[in-house]
Amino acid sequence: MDSKINQTAQQPTYLRPDKAASAEAMENTSQIPGQQVDQKAGLDSLLLDDASINGLQELVDKIEPLLAGGRLTRIVDLLSVTADMVDMTDAYMVEKLARAVEDVTAAAWTTGNAARMAREQVSAMPEPPTLIGLLRMAREPEVRRGLSFMLAMAGVLGKGMPHDNLDYTQD
Image (spheres, rainbow, N blue to C red):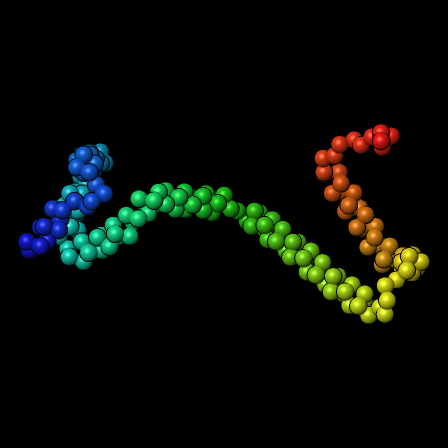
């Protein structure tokens, strides 16, 4: 029994006496008006149980490095952001995110397949095509469609890039 009293009488190293006193004052004033809540008796019964004391000590030992390094605040912030995201999530948002992920996956899959197929076609050529050979390839509708797509994409990318007006008349 004396070991229990000694364990409960010891204050953790991270609590200063003034913090312990303010915590006790807060405990006494935290009762809800109109209800008789016996928090002191609940805490006393918790502190007299060996398993509870050991569990609390293990918890304090694990939290101390987080407190010392300021990482506990980051963990709480991360949990807060996660809770906010869960609160904001509705069926429409989930559907929209799923569609965006599906579109990105499909684009990556299509690009990968096109690159593999083009590599196979180019590697099957005995020698690189000449300029006239490239122009002959441009007669095929698939090649023209692909070239127009690439040129349209280059135009969109070019519109988004800041540029200086170049004066080609100066030397």
